[in-house]
Amino acid sequence: MGGPVARMSDSARLTPDRNVPGLIVKFGGYPLHHGGVAAIRTLGRLGVPMYAITEDRYTPAAVSRHLTRAFPWPTTGTEEPARLVDGLLRIGRRIGRPTVLIPTDEEAAVLIAEHQDELAGTGTGFGGFLFPRVEAELPRRLASKQGLHELCEEHGITSPAASFPESRSDIAEFAATASFPVVAKNREAFTRRKSPAVNGTTRIETPQGLLELARDWGERPGVILQEYLPREQAEDWIVHAYFDADSMPRAMFTGVKVRSWPPHAGMTANAYVVDNPELADLAARFIKQIGFTGIIDLDLRFDRRDGQYKLLDFNPRMGAQFRLFESESGVDVVRAMHLDLTGRAVPEGEQRAGHRYVVENIDLPALLAYRRSGYTTPHAPTRASGTELAWLAADDMRPFFTMLARFVRPGAKHLYQLWRTNRRGSTTTK
Image (tube, rainbow, N blue to C red):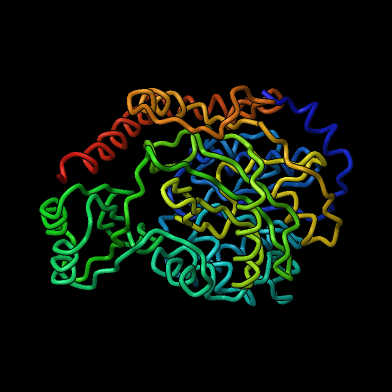
């Protein structure tokens, strides 16, 4: 594991404003979120006071030694926006000074974008929150599968061919003309607001399988039916970056995903930093065209059949695996955002090529699943130049043990359910 001593010596050149805290903003119940813990650590190690919204007082984030205070606030993601905004403002007044907001999910990112004036206002009683200012509607559109697909078409960015059925007859017509297999996903990101049509990414092998699955989708199916990119002919890449108010990259990183959970369709379990100037240029060009500012987490699939990178997902926020990426000057995307929003310089530096990231509690089952599938990632280095673990850190052990305590029994059951769901999506829809 890349230890804190090495990280701190690299980051000694950074000069953050320690008078401006950070607040982890999350809505919904997902207490075992390693990204939130990583954000607390990465700024807390620089002396920035860190606060976090947590499900309760006993989540991994809540027990981090780098956290100044947790604000337990159980939410579901179905609350009215006004209630969530009021809750954030109450927390801001308790912190008592301007604070950088760090959203960890789409609901939080969209809420912040759509209520910028209220959250940044000087009449808040504490000076207001700090966050990248962006066109209010853009994060919601980017988080939507349909919205993202339309933006890609508008700006010449390649994405998988897709259909957005509005009725049962649309699905029947698609089944009669499409090439199978296809992939079904929920059209909108906010599936916690209602029962999702599909559970994650579902591969459908035949027209009959699609028609059978669609029986439960209702009269207006909220799905996207997407071209299937064969695993044996593709490779998954990720881009994490921070863009300033002029949509210019202040920190840009590229890497390749080795394993995910559920297999081939879920969150990153194992990944490497790999230099890819072509991919970095593609991301920078797209962000400039759409005028986005802030942190991005992109998932792309390289299709070896036509040599193109196809954009699958655009997360307008910090990704859970962002700590895979750090520059030689000690900058990651969360540090870059805090520095920029507080008027500090963001040091330049090359990314740590060959560095590896491992999420301990999901990488082992992912490894077993990938070995059975025979999937390989040619661009992954044969040996890592260093490894960042998602949970275990020598200077902050309590989040790791808290994760184990909350994960072992219910977590193992959840992993099994995810695996079964993934298998059903690939086999019983034939």
